[in-house]
Length: 543
Ligand SMILES: Nc1ncnc2c1ncn2[C@@H]1O[C@H](COP(=O)(O)OP(=O)(O)OP(=O)(O)O)[C@@H](O)[C@H]1O
Image: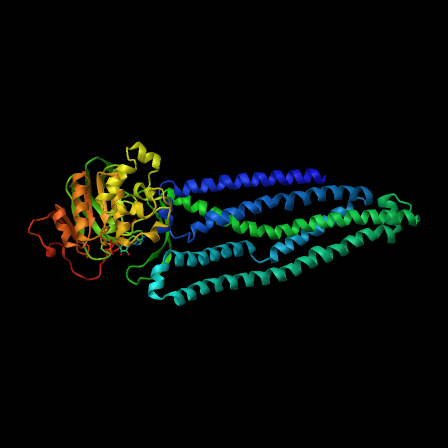
């Protein structure tokens, strides 16, 4: 029996491991295919710690699942077996009575138990928040150190930790009180009931004769039966008791289940273009109740065409449904570099988020080349995990680069364009692995990002203040190289030195208006100057 039991346990554990692998893989596919990870972080605000859900919660959910067999299957087998044996020995009445007692106690326990499943979900969320406060410190250690912000960060971390402690203390107190209640019902009262049932044949000779066909006057036989039956009854009680207490532990499992199912629900929703956000009222700036934004029926149209980016009557709308610009129309063809200017928060980056399909298209028509022919270079370049070569060719792999004819020698030519040739030797070769975000200076990071742009050589590139830390002379060389390589540029910048590298100007005034025009060789800083007033939205979009 115990060998079978152990084999079953091992099989269930192996199945649970397979289940965990499949679930994690499935979650990764949904999270990292397309740009679900971006939408969860920026458009939808139901999940605060997707990392915690994808790592710990899926793990704990699968682990709890694997315990289900030993927690449920074994007591069930024991109940069947001992109830049968007991029925044989002292008639069906005793086991039926015993099981009825446990069913009743199970119902009472269920009715009075606090919602432990919900508490587990809250605990996991709080732990995710706590971990996030620490990962932020690692990610921004230099900035915090310069500001001397250690004390402030300590307060934030400790406040988050206090929330977890308070919650766990509350749950433990409830579990303690609940445990006493459980023990009284499931252990002590159950034992009393069981011994009452066992003692009946001993003290009631008529019951012994009628129900059990025993000779009530035979004390030795009565004693022998009493001791055998008590062992059956104790085993039966233990099995039912274990099952009822498992019901309580199942609430923890329910907590993990609700977290994991919420993760999959949100991933499915955002994949289908439905976001849930806590909306902010434009007038008062206060956060209101959650609103579901369904973008599946929006009227915006995308046409894929090489050599042109054309916006026709496209509104610029934030995920909070604030309209930054009611309608934007402009056309840029290959070879026409365009400079974009405007005050902070007027919608320059938002324009690119719409162009890159990160934000939904609320109306109008966007004509653009396929996504692989557009390239975005942000102000803070992303540096991947991996070798120095990986930084230049990201997101390609070395094999992709070789297929495209880029061996290390050709990559070095690109590095020389951005004046970074010295880095390969300094950092120990192309295959050296470092924490590149820490090792490279701000200007070096931006120049690596430009080398990456030249490697990919797209039709159009969006340069979002991505040379702000690069010296003006190297910047000019990079712009010249991009033109020679046939890359058409959209540049967001406040540097007047860049005027001469562009033919067109798209200027936002931050109050819902814009102008798109050809740049004049005589244009100076005033041409793309703007007021310094606060950006205003043109109200909320109606769905
Ligand atoms: N994920 C988001 N959810 C809601 N609103 C957002 C989001 N991202 C940006 N916004 C808002 O959209 C507006 C335009 O932002 P955007 O990043 O386009 O400004 P910008 O013109 O590029 O500014 P800057 O010059 O400072 O980079 C801002 O008011 C900003 O607060």
